[in-house]
Image 1: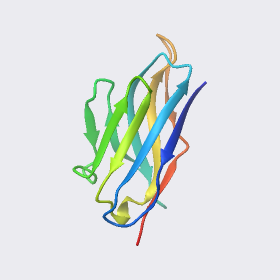
Image 2 (image 1 turned 180 degrees about the vertical axis):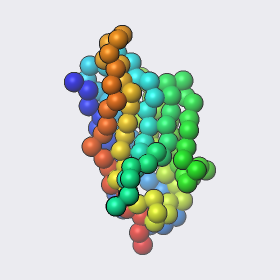
Image 3 (image 1 turned 30 degrees about the vertical axis):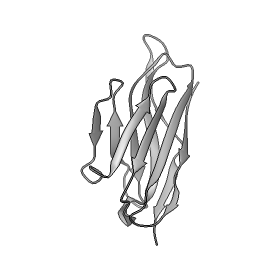
Image 4 (image 1 turned 60 degrees about the vertical axis):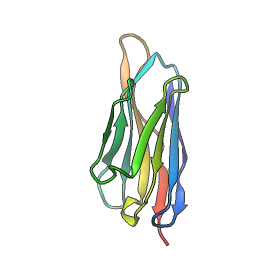
Length: 120
């Protein structure tokens, strides 16, 4: 079994900063792309940022310059540093990873979600 466990999140004022982390555990052979998605109330889940195993990153236009994604391949952990937060960043943030459980089998796994609220 593979699990993604998120930590961080919470309540922050507009303009503030917050960090999220997500650790993968279980029967893991290797991890390809890891990323963060978010879902605001009554909206569809959307991409926030992704990072490949060699460190290539991709960001949604709405977070470029404010959010930074990084990963620790030894610890199987992905991070999201969020700065200059806006009320429209309020959402549940989900960790995502493409994980190989052996040399042939792989799957897409999701964390349980970490709520982030940006409000004064």
